Image 1: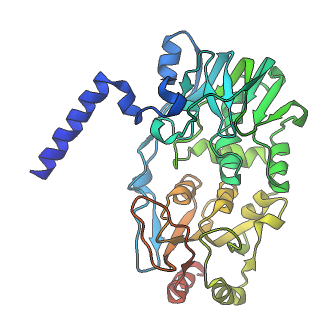
Image 2: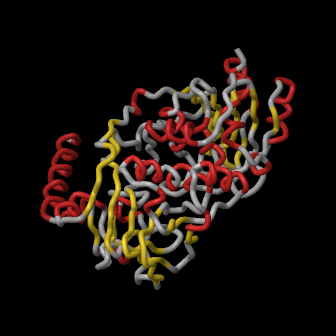
Image 3: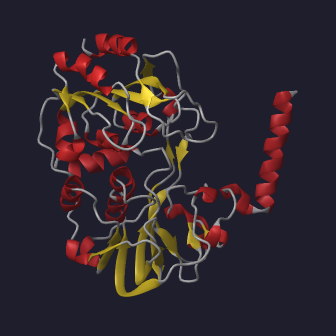
Length: 379
């Protein structure tokens, strides 16, 4: 009976979405009450260049290994497909804020440029439009939600350059590049490796935006936590990586911020005799090369793991995850990069398992679980 009720609810929801398409995307938010997707934009005569058709994402075949007491189904919330990706050419197009909201001339929010794409309700657009600066020329937007952080800069913003070039455009074709300013020496290194011209860049500012005579913007290269296979090849061929055999053993602590390992020193005392480096990414100006040289990486869940995109196939990853912050980001990335993913879930201090919300509490990793993992990883 329960299965029958679920089927009826699904059919009823599909009928409602047919009658009211906005429901399909989760409902309007702020100025997103006027929105348009890539299909409608193209049907209305807008320029849309498809670079990749819909891609299958076979995450259910992805493997991981749990070495602790608790388990997590990484595949549960992942979709089976990534929608088509491509490039828009938008006359008088606008980009707002450090979140990179893309609007048409008449203020329609282009949902496919957003990190959330079809989950419009999560876009958190402002209630009113911010003031914009007019640019009399062609502008490429490399903006993405939260791309003022390293993870989103590396995996959401920079890969848009590949879509731009794959669609037949060249950086010589643009007068301006609109993006968030790189936040570290390492991020600047990657910026330079991409061949981007700093003199063309206009850095995004909070509660401000730009409007270009012609705006070139791309769909989001991924879909939330789903990363495409082409991203790994693009990043590894575009960034200068010295060929080597993977050999370095890295332990990456989480020294600041939230969700730290409370027994970090105890963990490293177990790793140091095995040859693990106590590696601090913030002190490394060439993180891509370091991750490319790694054979085993042990680390708490955190933004530094975006660098897994530079690892060589079969690199072993042991990810520590909090019971209050179970996320699929790096399982997904390890899968498309052909890495070997392992994990241990640690209990938050004090114990908490928030429903639907993320806990920022620090957490404890049980040493005996780590011993089991190491006996396998070091073989």
